[in-house]
Image 1: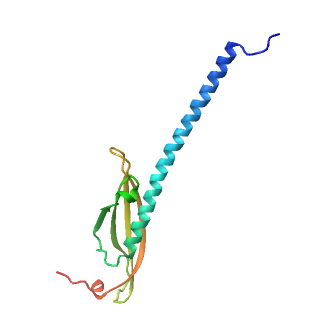
Image 2: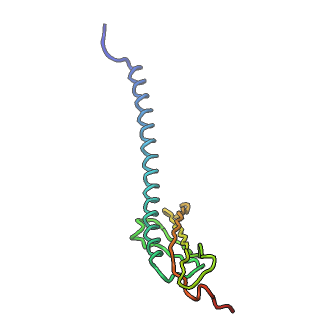
Image 3: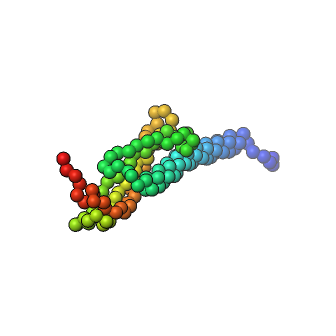
Amino acid sequence: MRRGFTLLEMIVATVILAVAVVGLLSAISGALRNAARLTDYDRAVQLARLEMNELLTTSRLPRDTVLSGEFAPDQTGGLDAGWQAQLTNFEKPPHPQAGGLALDRIELQVWWTKGNGAARRTLTLDAYRQRVLKPEDVNPAGP
């Protein structure tokens, strides 16, 4: 009796191995695409946090006005990214008085794209901060 593999057995084994390798490479490719997409999202989250911290610490933001800007290329790691923010009154006491407290809301939307023609993606953050009411907040000068 002769030992060894026949040509047919070798071809079947090679086909099975080829199918397994193609499936593995496809899975690795998909995982790399997901990792790249998540990396962009993580970078956008970090940019949003930095910008929100800047907005929260700026005491003279105009109310009910849309502010916007773009991030520097050295911050974005190759992404075309920017932001848009708005400060609004969220809550005032029922009978506001100068020296009383009110609550402001800052809504920040960060956008980014990866390369030309890529879909624009967005991320929205909200933050709240207290402020002390001034006399002009309580009795605004009318026209």
